[in-house]
Image (cartoon, rainbow over all chains, first blue to last red; front, side):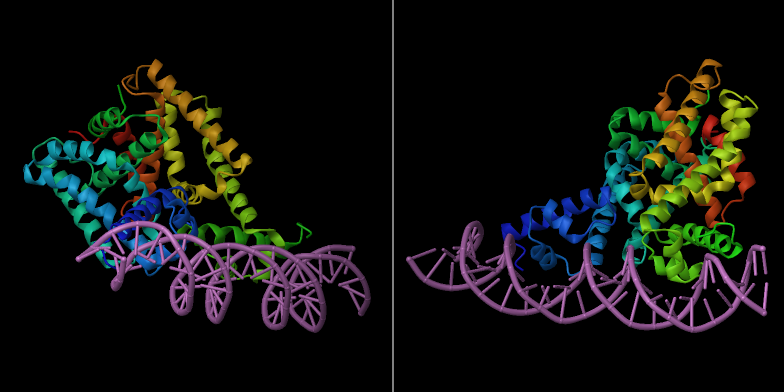
Length: 187
Length: 187
DNA sequence: AGTCTATGACACAATAGTGTTTCATAGATT
DNA sequence: AATCTATGAAACACTATTGTGTCATAGACT
């Protein structure tokens, strides 16, 4: 398979896109369904991805790469603590569907060491930010860091649900998310 | 199948329990696995549940019945608004695994009108409580009711994760949940 | 003790999905 | 124009799972 061939590229991209979309709706979707959704023959799918597992692994890696890319500028800017978390929420919100995808396929992808490595690095970075927030006094010490990290994770997921269902646009979702995270829904 | 027969009862209960536990770990688990986990013949499973779908539907209904039962005393006590939501969080926390189950099997169960009816009723009740909270001034009007309901949903799910992973006991989870929900993690 | 019935083991058909192979063809490269 | 190569269609073997049917047996009810 000559990767420079525009046909091969188009097929591959179409398959990756269709993979995310289809598996997002139904994590048990067959490879036939995915190929059909990509408007590509089932045989072609197997030419690009040896097995079902490999397809899912590559989709997971792609999603993680995207989230990494979204976080990178924040690291480069050397933002810290609460400020960094706020930037992160804004940056990650447009990738809502990738989060859904990763979560729903997690039971398959977690077998892959490469995937879990990247994921754990992201979680560790988030922990670091929370710790910084506690030190700078912008995050309460009443709750464990693990708790805070989990809450942030859930918050992103919840926002993603609302955005995907169309009940909320990305803008208001991320600003509401920041408010809810640091101030709760109390008056 | 004579339901009064103790053998039949035992089998049925064992199957329902094994169903939750097994499908919680792996939503794609086969009926053989579930039967084995219940220490019951595969044939017996099919005697109690005509199809795989029916088993899952009954498991979903059972989970919803449990959450309903947990909420009922709060309705009876005629608690309102924020107070009611706090009670709810405490009452629902022990049912964490049921929430996980419902969420992970949702793509199957949502086809069933009976299941979605009950679920929607629960969501509507939650909406009512949020509205009451807004009126009594304990919940901010800055965010939509849908937003608040989604956040509560996510919060419960997040707590459930922590409890299930053993990183947090039910007690501290529910008190932290209340704090986080109404006050956020800000200092 | 005698009858009823839920059960488990086994065999079975039917289905669905996975992964491979072959071959003619349309599109890309030179 | 001639060559190379990715593709789609079809046929294929293989596996896992679903769902059904039979029958002897152990447990429950009278």
